[in-house]
Image (cartoon, rainbow, N blue to C red; front, top):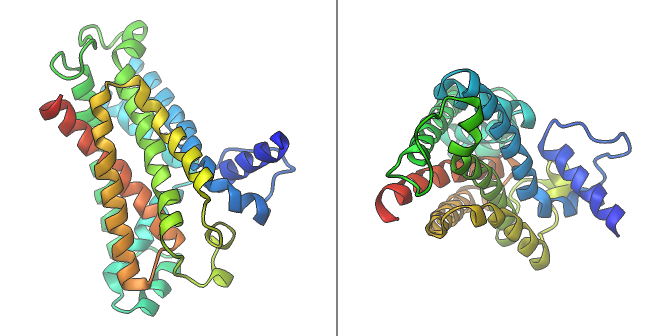
Length: 281
């Protein structure tokens, strides 16, 4: 049983990232179908990678450069898996006016004007939102118990940036829970026989799997003040509204749609985190 779960977890790692796994792990449909339960845990891994690069660069360079480096690390770790889906969605829904045309454009491996503009806007938004999130967590008026002095020394970097690091992990984990939720409550729109997401898309996560994924995604919030739990409902609402929009136009979701939901959910989390820290706490 444990060995089977371990292989399922490694399959999730292989599916969502470029991290190397043992040679015996392949894209076996049975393991792929059960892998979504571990998507938020993969978010933990990506978040830790991004946070580690941030801390290293923060100790050596400016905060802006550290945020940029952490974003690049996340893109390299995932192979731009979700960013690619977001760009395809921008192209498909920006240039297509029928279900068939939208799906056809999204399957095209080339990126168009809508995709390029959308991707630039998304990456720029992430950078600015993470910058404001860092400023909030370092401010004496932001999160209690978080000193703002001596933040440029290597010895104090981890302590002073603790809440930002936790927020980073929470963002990556919670945003990867949203595709699992959407897979549970919405239908797959594309033809499974011609889709690279076929093994994952043909099975809805069970309630137990959804509960496990949700618990994993919520764990980082235990390290933050309780009022930051208020950032979760807006993320869920936006994810469902996006899924409803996809359903209206193409009858459900595709793998690219799930990638777009992850990207937007991550930005919504940073936005609500900032608003809660400034105006609600």
